[in-house]
Length: 337
Image (cartoon, rainbow, N blue to C red):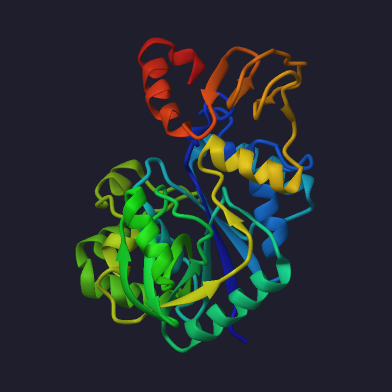
């Protein structure tokens, strides 16, 4: 029977959720949801549909990952520790090189929340079937609104026509109105052999560098000099935009990448399970993320994020501003990053 391994990509620091998310406690490990982190929810959600887990991360996150896996009684059968990140195409190649060529890899980020288990499981089963037939499978999320922060997949049924970059609002609305565009979820499913074959076809330099890096792994860690020699490239640019073997599974399950405070707020308003999220008394449409009591009067449309050493006040709907705020703090207050 063909094995299916969930490859969990966990290397980012979630800077768009600063000051909640820091280098020392990135967003995937924040216990924001019913006392569990997004990372823990990922494992609990997928353990019903895969045979085992592989973690690709960095050394600074490894001990936290171990602690959180143990807390939920989980297990990780294999780990690959990257001393520096080289984006998703090399990370996935290293995962493929670590398993039997016929193994199906279900690749997921560690920082997404997903609902509607029945629909989710149905989509994964369809993806596995396509993967066994030799396809590289993406998951297209049925869009609910013209989001400008996501990439899009244009498709006809399960056939991918093309991948589209993050659009402006007008273009995103055109995509929504057309009815054949989907949000690109960043989740993938394929046989290891299929991915490596397509990577060799379109990006042989990346593959050869990954083969050398994999051969040098000691104690699960890739040597720094071999990792640095790998070109930095995403799976989308390296393989998916070129390959003729790409399929998408149109999916209607609840999905959010929690990549901004606006998406976190929307998720919390819908599911009522974000720890510390409360409406601010005496205001219109204003919320706080805090263990403290936050009160005000006459304010409208603000989010107050309170941590032990920083407070962020942000207009709701303007969470893109966090990027510039983070960069400013990074230049002057490295201890807060």
